[in-house]
Image 1 (tube, rainbow, N blue to C red):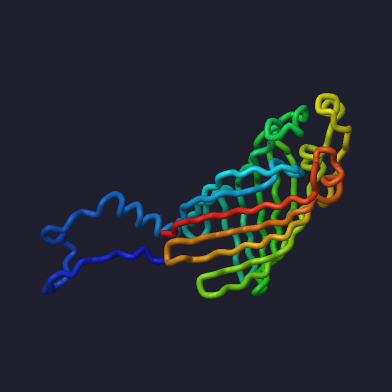
Image 2: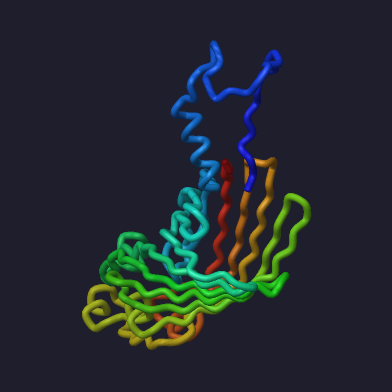
Length: 263
C-alpha cells in the first residue's frame, strides 16, 4: 500500500504537544477526509479502453471504454468493476474467494451476423475463485454460475508465471474454459426458429471446452500513485464453439490499456 503524503509547512517549535487546535489552524475539509478514506481502502481509480471482438466468435472488433475502480474494505471484502469479492480463506499460498458479479449477455444489434438470433439478457453471476501460489507460478480455477441471461455454468483453469523488475511487473500464462450445455447452447446454438429468421444452419452446441487463451499482462508504477496496466490476450475457440455457424472466426484476440491513480 502506498502512503498518501501530507506536506506540512515549517512551524515554530512549541513547548508541548496538545490535541487542541492551534491558533489559525483550519479544520480538515471534506476533500481531505475523502482522500484519507480512499487511502485506507487502498483505492485505485482510473480508466482506459479495450479492443475485443464484437461478440464471442466475431470477425469484427469493437473499441469500448473501460472504467478502473478498485477498493479493499478491510482484509476480507474488495470491489472492482467485475463485482464484489469476499476473501474466505488464505493460508500458505492457497486462497478461496467468493464473488458476486454480472454478465451483460449479448445484443443481436451488436452485429448484423446476429440478426434473427434474438438477445441474450443480462444476468447475475455467482463465482468461486481458487488459487494456489507456487512462486513464481500461480494456478487458478474460476467457477461461474450465471443466473438469468444465458443461465449457464463455466469453469476456467489457468496458470500464470509472474516476474517483477523494480516498478514493473509482467505475467504470462495459458488457460482453458469449459462450458456446460446451457452456456454453449445460449451463445453458439441455433434453434429451428433462429435458423429460419437468421439464415444460419440449425446447430446444437453441447457442453465442452469452448476456448483456450494465452494472456500477457504488464503493470508499471510511474510513481507511488500513478499506475499503468496493459493486457493482450490470444484466444482460440474450440469444439462446438468453433464449429457453430454463429462463429465467424475462431481466433479471438483482444487488448486492454488502463491508467489509474492509487490513493
